[in-house]
Length: 278
Ligand code: 7PJ
Image 1 (cartoon, rainbow, N blue to C red):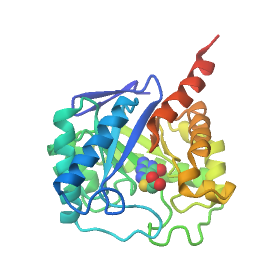
Image 2: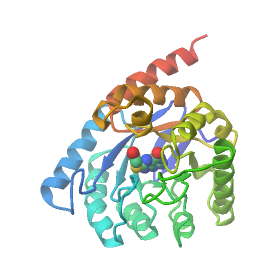
Image 3: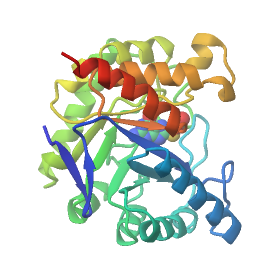
Image 4: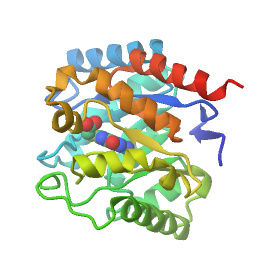
């Protein structure tokens, strides 16, 4: 398996588990466009996450939460491009663009992004071709349904083998499109068209997904599975998120996508130390 990812000239070392810091630039977080104060705040947040140990920053301009409404290409570009440009010149870590739109992928990579995080696993028209041309690593995530209705009644016969089969098919589609296997990362998509038991089962059996032989990224941070499990509001899900991040790392995850960088770095450092001692 690849020991590092080449993200447009910036290296992401996968010998140790990495923390990916989440930078949302959606109206409910920082910004409704590229205005100065909003951009400034987002940049500050990214610097802080890197100081805390984030190895990569994931910039997203379209909310993919359950029930979220789609945004236009132009809106998404207005939100993310000033951030990508600002961070490219100020930080050395790779920048990930969280998008499913080929136009946004191209513009973000032109502006300095070196990793694509696509919750639609390059399923949109033109996305496979865009990534093949851009030659940057890409995360392929599983989702059942679409964000708007995906949590209404998720159903599986066998969630682990179905998610694995989907990811295997997307890997094949990428290879057929000319994308190098070394640039692929896989994500089971916790919370994307999954109920509590589906999420727990995927976490428990993460090693089965790892059998595909590619690095895995997981996003568990503050997710509603912890509300379902522990009845916790979003601002009280840190401990549950850390616990899940540690379990994921011990089961082979290479990248964990989180809001709380410092706490996650510390938690997985303990897991790593225990895992690597004789
Ligand atoms: C994920 C994501 C995830 C990847 C979001 C949230 C919802 N990208 N984008 N994996 N989740 N690759 O952070 O709660 O799990 S948005």
